[in-house]
Image (cartoon, rainbow, N blue to C red; front, side):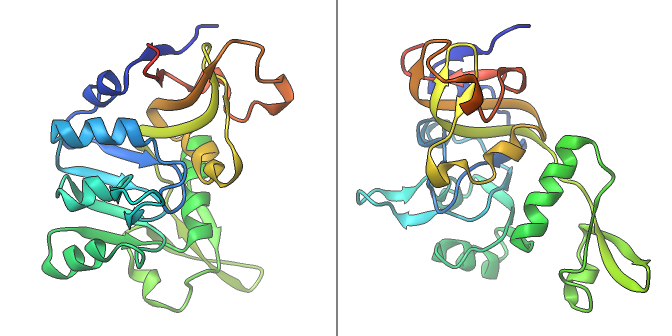
Length: 229
């Protein structure tokens, strides 16, 4: 069994080509891999498809301007976005309205289940959420299915070229532990991308994370982004 390659945030960002689809973990910027995103922003890599819960915040908790994925949205590096709510970042709404950003809003539970299905190799997700609404006409709904007299939407699975995640503790083999709400979506996204990059808040030695605390196994992680590389 191999181990993840340790690279700098700049090297990690350079792995992502123009036009790539990226899943980014976190909630309102918490759990975004901020250093990798900053380097991706500097590179100017564009025409990205972003799959993220939200567009993060225009102002971060420390006064940062365009926190997390908000940098990529404001700089027009993202042309498509799949998420569950975008109201906290006015730039998303502005770009939706002027046509420069194609936004697909998906109910949050459906979104995470579609990612899980993509990672597990399932054909889709059956959910009653959105039945009888305009969601039925969305591109990500395959059809309506009736089971035992109840109707469900068959939602297509989601996968991406890259998953950009952030772990509070990441050992040098690639095992990951997420802290608090940082965990949001990341566990599923690690299974649903061709290449998984995890930014380490703290790079630790193998064994420093108790086995029972490992949330994402090293077998899923291709690269660890750390300034200690």
